[in-house]
Length: 299
Image (cartoon, rainbow, N blue to C red; front, side):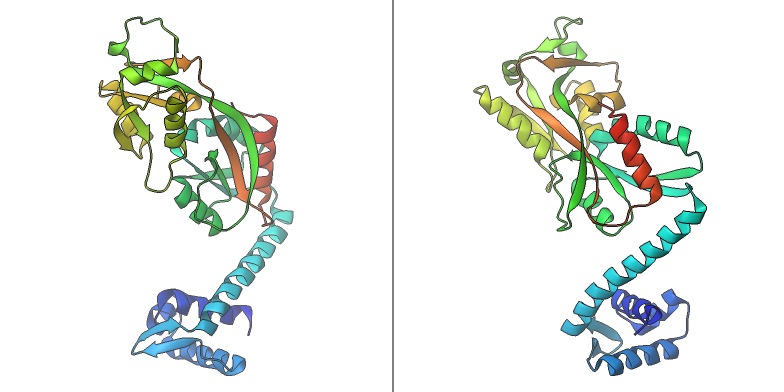
């Protein structure tokens, strides 16, 4: 069984039909059917259960799919690595980021582009689960995210920890009695309706805020849990409530009708990291980007 046949097999497994797989592979159906039959004869196993035109993997097929995906990934990475020896620093670097960390990227990209202008970027925004999925599938190589990284992936990640990010209170400017006020005590949060960042799968920031309020002896009045940083900021600016965010988030939202206050007696920080797949091939561009981040930590 060779590399070409592995690609045929994986295409059939993904599509669940010989006809659709043949179209994806840009080949005729009869040759693809023959190749599948040859694979099953060579391995002396049935790889697919047939139900009319629909195919589903047998246990043997599922095992082969797992092994074939890893082998092809290693093969493709080897080809990429060899090409990079001749091509130098060019091509596209794909990076993922959670919204609350977007403000950490521009400086790193600026410094990187100054040294390697031939490299272009693709940036994906999403929550931990989406970014973990795309990391594992190799659609992106690096992720900037809050820690711990709440991903469903069982893959191990390498992490470059960035400096801790303090939390700040963000309130509607019209609610402030002193426009020049710069600080606030955690206990004062109890006076206001609170908006928190939370999704069905990622709850880290929400829990940090809740626990800090409890540590100061009160249960906050949460009126909205929202998965979007931008929506929360719009609600704060409209006077719906206040929020507590890591300080770096505010660099992306310079809104005129909000006031950002340092929580002087807070005892919690948001941990931030640059992540990539552990023990897996990284492109030359990704390795140099990590180096630049480590030398110019953005917080």
